[in-house]
Amino acid sequence: MKVKASGQGYIEHGNIKREFKNHFVTGGLELMAWLFSCNIGPGNTDMEYWSADAILVGADTATQTTFSMSTLVSPINILINASTLYNIYYFNGSTASARIISIYPVSALPSATIGEIGFNGSFISYAQYIPLNLISRASNADGDFIAFAYNPANQLQITWNLIFSWV
Image 1 (cartoon, rainbow, N blue to C red):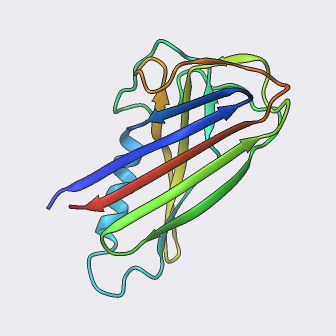
Image 2 (cartoon, rainbow, N blue to C red; image 1 turned 135 degrees about the horizontal axis):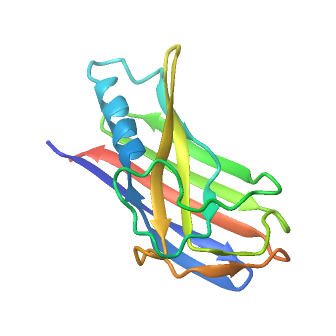
Image 3 (cartoon, one colour; image 1 turned 180 degrees about the vertical axis):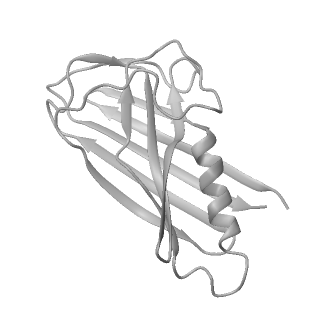
């Protein structure tokens, strides 16, 4: 058996619409290891799940993603917290999937070029809480999406879909 990880998403900002793919980094591998190692026996799936923080944005447009990344290269200071919606975050024995939607309202960020996005997360099992650094990143430098200028007059919405599965 192999473990398959996939992810893709969408960026919407005013008239800008971008689709992107992502690159899992060390935090993503750690998350997969926790998900699959804690769900070996029957009945173990009731108390294990994972969660993600709001999707982060950064200004870097030149640095390609490396597996050892634990943060965005040039995070943009967020002035107003995003509202973040989550779907799923549980493990059914062979697949863990999630949809993360972060919506930054008007004027949530200073004017800047957005060239990278990513998110952090955590794994929760019974009474054990394991925070993880950067799980996944998408960037202009990797050709995942075309960098764009953030306009404070427009809302920014980022939707990220993820699947980890045994195949």
